[in-house]
Image (cartoon, rainbow, N blue to C red; front, side):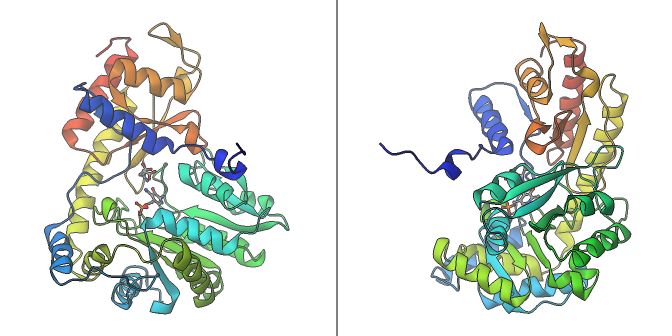
Length: 399
Ligand code: PMP
Ligand code: GLU
């Protein structure tokens, strides 16, 4: 038989989803395991949003819609972007699709020719690197260290740009680091992108989760020149605990949004009609529930960071947004635990799951091999238990 597609064969499975399914399987087998894997809010979708979905079914809102979503949901997106980020978009500049993941893919599809370079700051969310390769792009990884708070500088960005560079992917606040670029930092990055004329896919899906009273700035809000080159990706998954409803959106200049729409028209058709109805309500009703969830995440972050830094052998910097902590394990590399010398984050993750009964995501898939990612989108009880287990595990005591 003939060989499968080389591009498809090169795709690696998603580490975040793989850890999550391993954790769920262990749980189903009755094992006492605590999960900090997939970044998914543990709260249920708020009732008024669920009701809007139920109502949509009752009202027979169960048919095809435009591929880029109904005018109703795109207007609701425009309203949110205006209120929360101070930027003006028209419905013709919005494409709604099946989760932010599809939106990143469709955006790359609209921008990238085979062989074009795409700048990717590391640590990066695991799916970006695969998605770039899936469209035939060449990822150019630019490392940002923990000492730099995992943020790339304009100098590093500038040095990575070549005549082949088409765009960069910026994730703010970041998965997996939780760090945020402030307005000044964004201005400096925007200046480079405008001067060198590159596009930016700005994934702002965690924008509502900014802590310590920090104000979020959207890249597109910096200047009209950068707005012209920015494709904002966002969605309802994280802000409204709606991961399973699969609604994300891209906001981009109309000619780019149109190309994305053409692409979606052939490959996905419209996103789920019922989910669009529920999302329109999520985006346009009172935003109180978002703030309640945010307050709970902030409290968990504070506890996790403080405890982690009291534990011998590991450390972390304090994330400013999203719901992830990057634990530095570099002091453990080369040390022996449970008869095994730890070589990297993969080793640590496997041993911690086997002997500590805790699932975390190794940083290897994020371009950060000295780190493991903990998601604190889980109960305080689980967080306490997970850190108790970490303490025991590092003393060589199995759970
Ligand atoms: N971007 C980032 C940075 C994410 O962490 C996620 C989480 N899955 C996504 C995009 C995709 O979100 P969605 O569930 O809307 O596809
Ligand atoms: N984005 C979340 C994470 O990083 C969900 C899993 C995924 O889609 O990768 O864990």
